[in-house]
Amino acid sequence: MTKTYAVIGDPIDHSFSPALHNAAFLFLGLDCTYIAYRIPKGELEYGIEALKKINISGFNVTIPHKVDMMKFLDEVDNECKLVGATNTIINENGRLKGYNTDVAGFLDPIKKRNISPKDSDVLLIGAGGAARAIIVGFGKEKVHRITITNRTRERAEELVKFAQGIGLESDYLDLQSAGEIANRYKFVVNATSVGLKGIGCPISTKNISKDSIVYDIVYVPVETPLIEQSKNQGATIIYGWEMLLAQAMKSFEIWTGRPAPYEAMKLTLLGRF
Ligand code: NAP
Image (cartoon, rainbow, N blue to C red; front, top):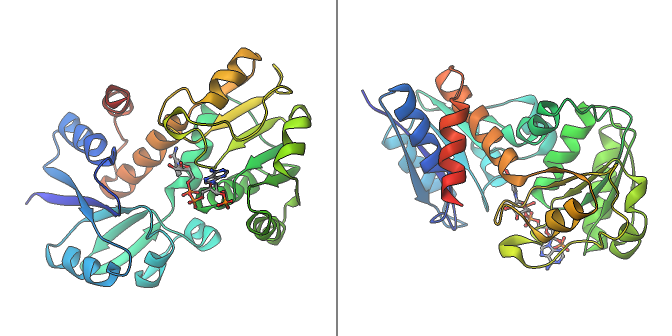
């Protein structure tokens, strides 16, 4: 019987996930299909009931449901617990198990480059949901310190406490100073939405150096202003699409128990840009 998968969220119409997963199913000849299903905020419970009624095999969860979805899970993996959010669900006869593949998805492109984050200093720009998953990821890799900068100071300070709570050294820095001393950090990671559609750069890049690793999780466009400017300074670049692809591959592997077809999924993703 055909297995059905989905991504839920709102808005959902420009999601890359259906194309990515359907390409993988097709490539491996699996009798599976993947749809985008818009569930507005406040309607999550009904949406989940509907998904159970059609016997959904699994689904991805995106904005605005990643945190709220936790309430509806029968079981959660360790990363979900740590981050407090889920993005991948498996449905086993009505029992929902949640995973968070953003953590491993974030780390994957770093590992692919054989870069070790251990004992590094990290400058993290942003304090939203993605930033939490990134902190958990760097926590697993035992970085030395994570400095958090953000437009809204209170949100950054909350995340400083969160990072300290999982055993990391962490402090707050304002955006202006972050640009001034960016060269003191091995990793500079943008987890804000600044740069989306090519508009804006989250910090000044004048002090980014060839020793910096600049990782922008924004993936539209591929070359954000932060990436473009950091490239000109000679920095090592990690692209947002790499994280997007890696977290999708991890979801695919959780659902099917098979290695995800990297090249087919990458071609499909890059073809969409
Ligand atoms: P979120 O929870 O809404 O957080 C948004 C963050 O961006 C906050 O830190 C917010 O600062 C900051 N921000 C928004 N507009 C800003 C502006 N005009 N100036 C300065 N800061 C601004 O979103 P999220 O889920 O963490 O996602 C953040 C970005 O990462 C999105 O673009 C998303 O598409 C991308 N993302 C990519 C991947 C991937 O796989 N590559 C995965 C997840 C997310 P305040 O706290 O001051 O509001």
